[in-house]
Amino acid sequence: MSEEPIPVQRTVFIEAEPELVFGFLVDPVLMAEWFGISHVLEVKVGGRFRVEVSRGNVAIGIFTEVTPHRRGAFTWGWESADTGLRALKPGTSRVEIELQPHKGGTLLRLVHSGLPKDLEEIHGQRWALYLARLALRLTKSTVSEHQSE
Image 1: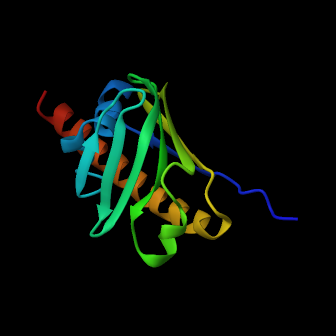
Image 2: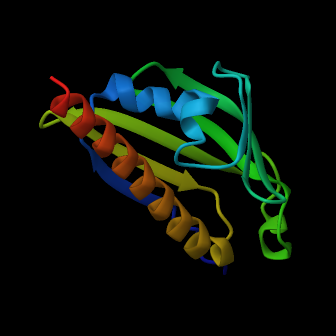
């Protein structure tokens, strides 16, 4: 009997309003500031999601949910990648991101489900890294905005 995969779950508090955070999830220019090096984002249900996460490692999918400033979801798999990641074919996993207003900022919850057992750890580590970058990037912008007031 095989073990049921456990979804990767990450939560981060971001010192910015959900509207600002959402922009960093759907705008290719803003996304490049925290995740990936090239982006094609057709932000609508059925639209393409394609991110070259690092040189030669390209994740692709289709947007399955888009609720501005609150929620987004897309399928996820590797179009091209290092040998180990290739096992995760396009369309075989799903990333869901939820934004909730929380104490003057945003609580971002990410769930990545459908991952093969041997890829859970690497995806969990990378999502933690990227979400920390996003939180840091937005904290800097929030601090800058308050200092200029």
